[in-house]
Image (cartoon, one colour):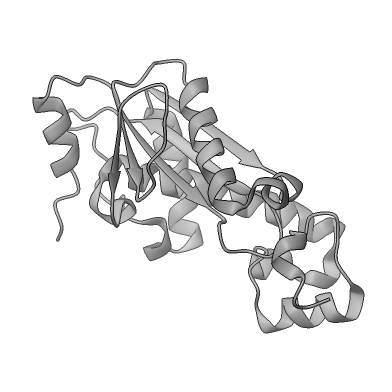
Length: 200
């Protein structure tokens, strides 16, 4: 198994005390927000949650259980979602970066460093971008789980408002059934116009 505390240990050795993990969920979907979590976890022995890994490798039930543990133990945790209209205005990469900056800026405990999955940003603290960070860094994995559970809940709520699009199943991603629904019913206010222009 990969040692997912290697980056955190490196930061601690450099004298950092508060290490934030930052990750986003929802860069690819045709509908819904992009959601970012920034979280500072305690890194002492006995405080580490052993089953934490990249949220994509976990079942929904497992993610929800871990999300509750993460938010309970976190030293600081902030989630920021930016809506489809903002994504259309500035593009998805810029919206993701902005959400990351806002999440870090809102933290009640100011991080000494932020470990971010593959994205470089100017933030309130120094940043280390880590390729495959959601798998290789415990802090980023924690952020990915909280972001995923939060965004999935948002999409489940939208599914009640727009039942014909099956958002509870596809979470806004471009499945065949979702694209068929767009062609049949048109788009909703939560669709990203720049993402669906090929289907309407």
